[in-house]
Amino acid sequence: NAGVTQTPKFQVLKTGQSMTLQCAQDMNHEYMSWYRQDPGMGLRLIHYSVGAGITDQGEVPNGYNVSRSTTEDFPLRLLSAAPSQTSVYFCASSPRLAGDQETQYFGPGTRLLVL
Amino acid sequence: RKEVEQDPGPFNVPEGATVAFNCTYSNSASQSFFWYRQDCRKEPKLLMSVYSSGNEDGRFTAQLNRASQYISLLIRDSKLSDSATYLCVVNGAGGSYIPTFGRGTSLIVHP
Image (cartoon, rainbow over all chains, first blue to last red; front, side, top):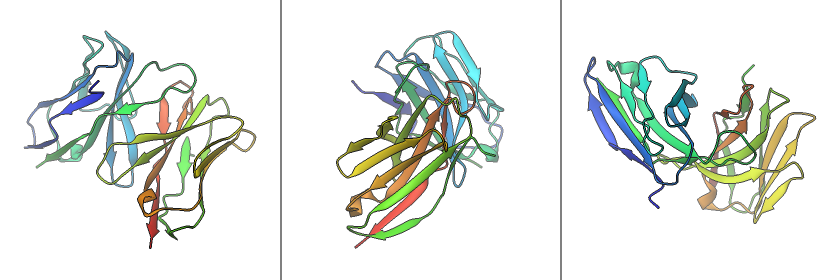
């Protein structure tokens, strides 16, 4: 199993450009999520999904869209990039959301710089 | 009050020392608890789950205190390789099953 994969590893955008961060998992996990991590702020939840066709907003959803057309893929779209979106983005998955002891598996991250 | 709080540190300790971190959570109905480790510029990885009765994995011991609403991580005989950021994660801290991450505690182990 490859686990959770993310592409690209690095990206530089200009203000106003749009792009999609890709995330895929091959573990048949129901729950997937996107976080951003900024210095001193910890991991903040952007969007999450409890299964194909179901998505919901997290703590900091503005400026981002997601979709979940398959169990495996959970892309994150930046609609019009802003310098405030410069961050490290992590995708994570776990077998289920509800229940006890549900470990999250993280992808290696995407480092995004918006100029 | 934040849902999950950690002392950011850094905790600077010599090799061989014992060090402990605490993490407090605000929702008494929180369901499950974890410690993750994150190395510099890497993704978080599960270190250990935290069980009600407490649990140990080698040099690492995790405890849960539901009455006072905190979890702890004890590291004995610290190694240089233990240097990392330790993230506390609470499922259900925000009133749903969504995991909530603390901001992390930085540990630096020096020779």
